[in-house]
Image (cartoon, rainbow, N blue to C red; front, side):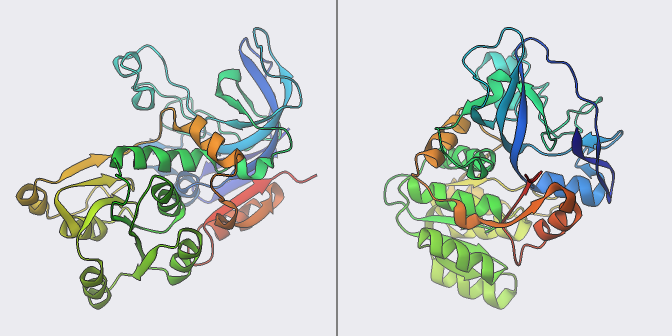
Length: 345
């Protein structure tokens, strides 16, 4: 079969890849659609994501859907031909975090498309990926598996919003209108946010999310624009920081009400210099959000039931033979939110 493989920074290849025999509990899929994530872009641009460094060729991709092609031994409840969304998490189920029910914080997590361990954990961007049956969430008959490729990032958004504890009618600020920030805004609106505000440096991204969620939007990125935005925003009950830059978190601290709640969703640079005194003098709660728990199944349910329309966030589609162009498009935040890949027909 063919697979989208990263060998080192800027070395992306669609190449032949050996297929493995199915082990107990596994299924083989026919790949349907996959979304290019920020971590895929980091592997492509830098050959690493933080301390996860490429040491061998690895199949990319952890946002994807497919059709069951073959079931292995000890698999029940999944029929050949069933369309599924794939949860890329594979926790060990033995560590203290798994025992506490916090499987997303598993100390030995094998997450698809990740170089965190050696040998690496291959992702799903292959013609016939093999996954555990337990990772597959069936989709309703006739549902377009293209949108199911957004279940994983939407689950991240749902988890962050759950941690935000949004009360009905609460004022909510989302900093960053990239893929995750946009999905967080969608999830926050569905969770009952009253006044919803989104900030970003890119006007097209703000226009897009305003059309989807009816959010107030403000362009930031210069001292003049930041001052004007903050004056208009005032104080808010909840902030979800999805930009992953120090200035956005500092704005969140300035804009949060006393005893308000900030959820850090975006990854901050390790050298970020921050002024956190505002947390103390307002007794603000700052909590991190990482991946998801049962929100993956809820993401599948909401998307497949049509409770949220994420279609407008799919801004480009490519075949896997156009992978280089797809990654370039995904890296252009001025034009794109979610870029999807398929192997074509």
